[in-house]
Length: 400
Image (cartoon, rainbow, N blue to C red; front, side):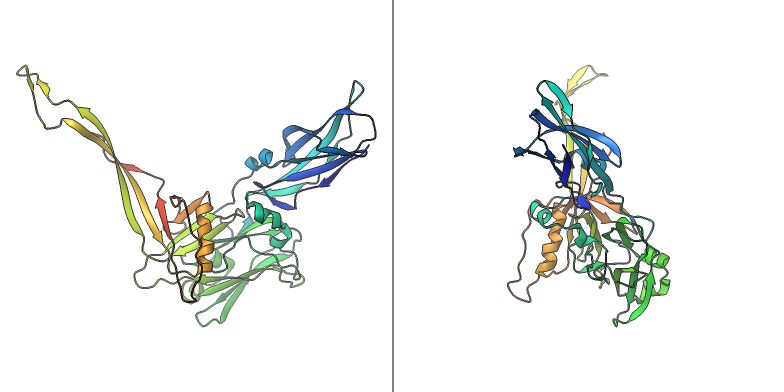
């Protein structure tokens, strides 16, 4: 009697979607009380034992399945940010697999089948919609070959960055030890002024960090990075065959105009990677003040005169402390509909950062609870997006 695992997750699958294993057990005995005993492993460490009822029987076969997402997703961290290297492992993955065996009775005797081990797969911290997950294919985001150019894990087709921001691009390198990342730098005339390559990249889910410091560390001159650079193009290349293994992604430097204030905001997108957007209009700062009060009676004893004196000073409702909640409205520049439709993904993210200073991240809370997808009714129509933000750290006045 053979138990065969017939379905496994994709090679790289989002941790918070279905992580599904299915099997069939060829059972020709007269058995009863059939269940399947499943042991779940994360990085080769057992984390759960689950008893699963069979789904149905057909002829001499019994069928079963398990979605292990709820058992394994808490063991996966979110993708790293502010990494020191130009490219490195994203830090948001884990290896998972299962073992399964049938448990059944023949007459009154308890029996179990031989243990079958499911293939090890990689989960990464991410969550797609049901529609997107149904169409998801990890090969689509993998740097494999010239014929199958992988995509970077972002929906942003128009990436802007500034001198103080960092751009992160995640992708999968499933195999091979001879791939590198090429970065091409262009000036204001669109002319190529320099090209640099990373060292050989490791296998796995990778994060590429593009910033002024990482570009200089890659070998670009300070002059080019600080003065001459206007755009970049990046891609993964097989150094042995010269095959370009990913899409070519363009990043455009966002120049500061007049007295505008640029605010770089980053958030975890649906792929578990960090997206970046530059808001170019001046921020609107405000505060909400909360009073802490107590009730003071109208009057008090004068101990020197032994009299009870009535006074309106320092009596009645009194404030003894103020809580100050800092808020900001972060305003984008004028957007095309496709840019606005992409940007509203920020409202669905559980983690949003605002850059403050050079490579300093401040966690922010976005209060917008609804959004509208704009449509280009006319070719010249433009929109902007306003984030209503609460800063996470409240301040307090002195206590009286």
